[in-house]
Image (cartoon, rainbow over all chains, first blue to last red):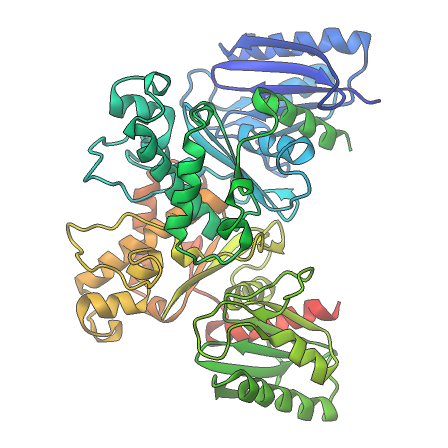
Length: 296
Length: 296
């Protein structure tokens, strides 16, 4: 059975794992994201040691961004214009290939997690769906007709504009590019900025959650009419507040107002807007899935 | 050279044509959309007469909706829940097949027009792009990774929610489902409702057009961050007001504010947001393209 290396390359930590599939993890390591030299060297060292014992078929990287995921581009596999110090224009795939001499699959963190959910989780059997993560940021990945969506670059769904309900929410939004875009109003830092405490300190019946459900529903409804997904998977730290899900589903139905006449939305929305099935291993399992595809 | 039949099935008129490709139209007829019996019979009669002289390889239908474009569905080829009298639950493909005994390709009007622009127009060589029409309604079709987007149903991009600038625009929007959704604020009837006259009566320097460009830009920016298209083609009666294009492009850049660092948007947006290349034959040429695909 072929064994793969996966890197969940996050802005605050890297998770590296060796696995043959979802239920067969051979090794795993986590360390903070510092400089590219130090952090990528740690990842390479981990895989080289494992590779010496048990050969790896390929490496997959689900990477924070923005990135260049276009294999035809001269900067394929780079982190491009990130504001994160030291990481702009880092050739992630090039460094891994030059040292490990293995095929390397590469995509955004959210596309990776989406691919993992498609292979082993809540999106099995679908061909068009969206994976959203709502935490310190708000990002989305999509599969359309069985292949990951890239297009011009990759989706940056957190930066869509939604109506800002200024009558009940004077909070201006925190996005440094757009102020009150979707991420600016609905990601974790917006909850903390608006209520002056972290979300996990707010009781489950606090009005923060109805407002959060409203903003999340606006973006979700926009995704439904734009991408027409067969399911929407929503994870990340904010969605650990499970009281959001029923309010969010109801608000999506209210906003669509019967316009999309499909039973998935009208009758069975509990199975349409769902949490991830892979829990906190979604990211690194997505990287393993990218490695499997790269080995093919 | 194979010859195809195409139907641009609109809510107010049908255009039927016979052609082998964009530059070889053999026959064309236009008639108003009345009842399904009468209108589809006229179309069938037109194709039967031509078929007796010169056999057709297939028929394509680019159809007003909502429709069911999923070939695996029992209601494939139906107009589904349209409010248009007599047309709800009409089996368009079934009637054509039963009388013409030919393969029938079928998609939404906007997906058809998008496919036509891909084959012969402004989207040649791309694999992920969006076609928008802004007229009496606002609709969008998309190709992703070389195939038309359908997903759960099909896109209904006109119904996304965008920020409504109530400080300079008290007009409430006209969408009967959502009030001030994108279509409710930016399609032709919104211009007429807001300024109490049709758009074609407003001078090119009227403030209506800057506001129109602003609303269109909000939806276009949302599509850019959600679908990451390589190009956006914008047609329809409202876009015949060509003064909108420069204002719209500038407003999209202002809204994105440098977040999507791609030369297509930062430097060459004139070639990124463009009018259709096929003019008023885009719809029926899209139907011909659907027929070509159905014949394969």
